[in-house]
Image 1: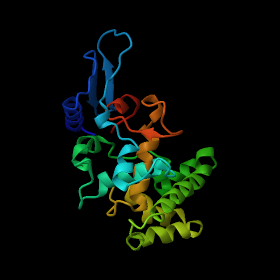
Image 2 (image 1 turned 45 degrees about the vertical axis):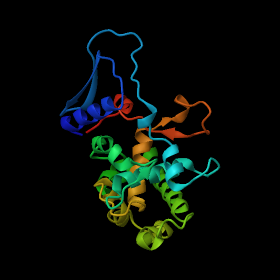
Image 3 (image 1 turned 90 degrees about the vertical axis):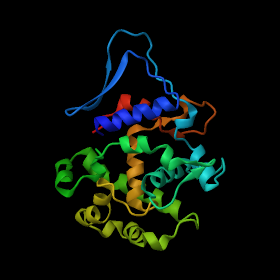
Length: 243
């Protein structure tokens, strides 16, 4: 993120009625990315955001025509988020609103680099050999891949022929070297260059965004399903290193 992207994001939030205490200032620095500075003492500071900019399960439910009983609604939310990020050919319209345009300042403000070992290149990953994280990478990656495959194969809205290479990679995952996997999948995700919004690299990008900055929906709605998650634009600036 740049200082211009931060400024655009904060202006976008203000246009929807986001309220940030005047004592709090978001600043961009080359060394640390975004920092939040409290310029004077303040009791119980809070940032208020309207429901209109909360990215929640309601969006994929309306767009994909899902029901409350749909399994893995969080997975569908991640697919939806990948769509508004990577589907450059078609608008994503919910309630007569172009959601991809609506959230563009937020999307533009997301990190340009994914800080996750799941997309590290082979030489970087070697540094984690013989560590708990390094030993768990394959299992975690396999679980994310399985989640994606179950989602895209559960509905005829997805043309699996267009993601045939990803499907083949999923089925042959145990036979691939990490170097081959990096070239086929991870590099595309790391560089944020998926060409198909429901491809696995696009889903993996979305998954990593949610892993790093999602909040439990429970903080907004105590009647929500268990484990339901949301993205809270601007609020998530407080908890992350944007670069």
